[in-house]
Length: 177
Image 1 (cartoon, one colour):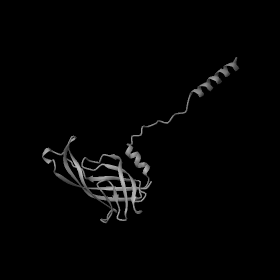
Image 2: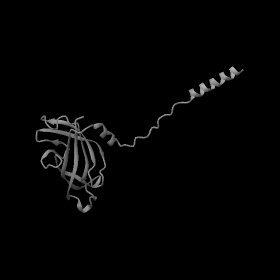
Image 3: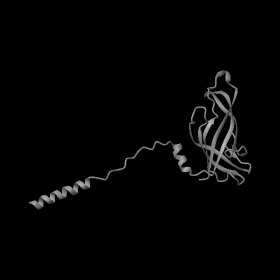
Image 4: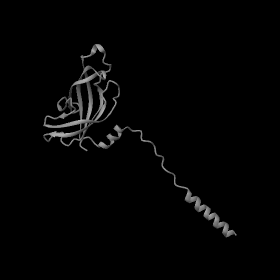
């Protein structure tokens, strides 16, 4: 009888072990934005430049209502601490270097600026064009740390047709991937 009792206890212990499982890790929800996750995948920048420029907006009225429409863009990119332009960004978001290399680009992702008066942080997806040079092989450009560049007031009825020039600075990082 005692051996039967030991056998039942052993079987009960074996079943109890089989039913239990090791503690599972707690899965925390990733609270990073798609923008932040994309930045992690870029790796180390091939080139980091300081951008300085002026954006010209025109108060426009159409079916959407009144708003400040970007009319002109004059952006110079240089080595931090230098004034010598080594890349210019055009209004169509293309980047041009004096060596003949250039990038066409489109906005892939963006994130709001630090304040309403700051340009958004933007990740551009780019394609090389033109001659071989400094910009050849660049696949992404990140504009971040912008200060200024955005109108801070709404476009009023009496401002329709008026222009507003707003200076800004930003960091531009170029990635080859």
